[in-house]
Length: 308
Image 1 (cartoon, rainbow, N blue to C red):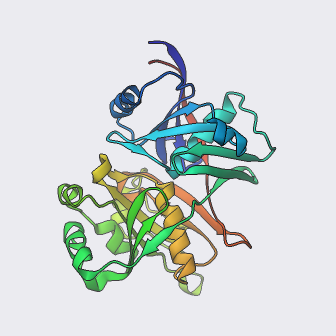
Image 2: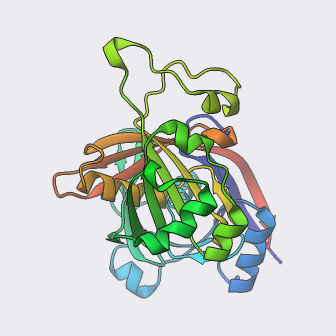
């Protein structure tokens, strides 16, 4: 056991305790896979990361550091909120990027680039593999979610390291009213992201939250003017997380799919975590090379050491 620098940060929020928390062990050198998994299980956060020196191959490719990402149940090759949160923690303890305004992270999917966009950092969405889903495969998932096929506008199998089943449904009300059977989703081995476009205010009227969102907002007060364009929920029972508060990898793959198929514009923002009392906000944009960037704010909450 040794004392290791530790932080807990809140990702995809500019207000502490309204985003997705992340535990970051800033020196994971010498820890075994079992020790990392054990600590991630103990934190009971959706993800815990361990920072390590880059491998020789990673260093040759420009990596500033390497990160391993664990849920309570397994290691992930890539995840979005751990990418932004780990970068924030690494920089806060004096990490010096090789190139100003840019970071290169080595992880299970390879090298991931982050860049500073104003005061906010964003990561380059990894390459996406996607495909259609048969009605036969979709049926059991819809049953576990309590969704009718008529409520689904589009569906895709999405894989950018983590694999998600992505569903675009007919309304924000439908998204927020979901009460999934998490045991059934775990048995199916399917992680599901459900999203709906938020209608633009008509005639200059203030956009108002629906009844379900109002009931579950952190302050239990009405959201008078929600600036986001997409409402998202993420169900990940197969990796030990019933519902994730805010999910960078899912929002990355949703953006790549929804922008490419014309469901969303090249720049938009998404809200996630409403039903959990969070107010996560993810900023998505596509550059002139068609690269999708995923940005968000990060707030430090706990700093100290952990004995591992």
